[in-house]
Amino acid sequence: MDMEFYRTAVPGALEIMLLMGQVIAVERRFWARETSTDLWDRIVLQWDDSQWLRNFRMRKGTFLELCDLLSPALKRQNTKMRAALTVEKRVVIALWKLATPDSYRSVGNQFGVGKSTVGAAVMQVAKAITQVLLRKLVTLGDVQVIVDGFAAMGFPNCGGAIDGTHIPILAPAHQGTQYINRKGYFSMVLQALVDHKGRFTNINAGWPGRVHDVRVFRNTTLFKGLQQGTYFPDQKITVGDVEMPIVILGDPAYPLMPWLMKPYTGSLDRSQELFNYRLSKCRMVVKCAFGRLKGRWRLLLTRSDLSQRNLPIVISACCVLHNLCESKGETFMAGWEAEANRLAADYAQPDTRAIRRAHQEALCIREALKTSLMSGQATV
Image (tube, rainbow, N blue to C red):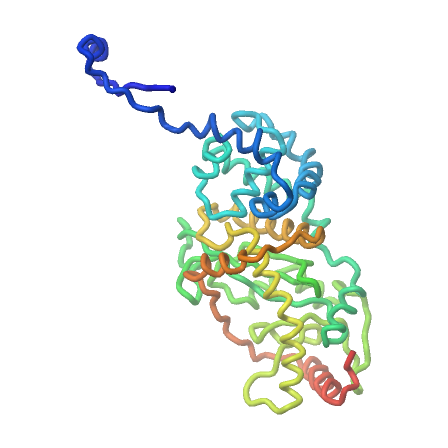
């Protein structure tokens, strides 16, 4: 057994204690650097797909494909790592950290590296993901497939559902009050547009938690593209006596626009209730997407100690990984949602003040669509 001795500061004291037979032998501490290296070198590589999925949120085949895609970007950074870690080990460390609420030290102990190495690996992998895969995986894709998907759910000519979610953070060193949301904790906003399958097609991360969703929205390229009519193809349908472009669906916090439909509020008649039901049913995909995003990548559920500059990169990388897992059909395991709800209990999502402004053309479109849905003319 490896042994170590308690030493005193007095010169020669150890030798005296040895002669007098007074040395206290103790077992050496558990050195994670030596023993836990086996977790990757001898254990993880032998895991089956269910073990890979449980710990890294993806099967081994998907992991190896991810490593191949990131390899050109990560190989150039080898000299920045103290131990010159392989691409595979760096990616697996990052995935473990993103998938668990473990501390940097705890993750480092698992893989036999220092906590600073874990921090470096997370950021290097996150940056590589956003540089190499963001534009490939977080993209609109085939618009007609999305429109057909939402039509099958009950809403015609719809190109996506939009919403925002708050990511808890530690109190920033500067402009801290700007990050306090309506629930009273510090947060950063992720706004996302998703398709009918809950995959992100457009994301924006980094705005302080105090900022209203509309302000976030109006300062995105998504808003500009929708406003200018360039984001979706010019594909209109006739509803009643008005033309309706491809629209996105939002909650009452968003403005009613010709290309953005939101629910009716206040006292509702039967036709308005039906319209709201159809819209709400389709909008659930964005709520579910956020739930699956955070259920997989639990780093987003607790107060992150990442800097204001680095956190948006990590959030974006998690969105890319979400799309990768969804496109590969990776199982969302039973229990992840319950665990996510437990971790998120202290950070309830804040309600956003409803916006009552409405574009006149949008009012006409919504009224025509409401009537059409009620009469059954827009059923699909």
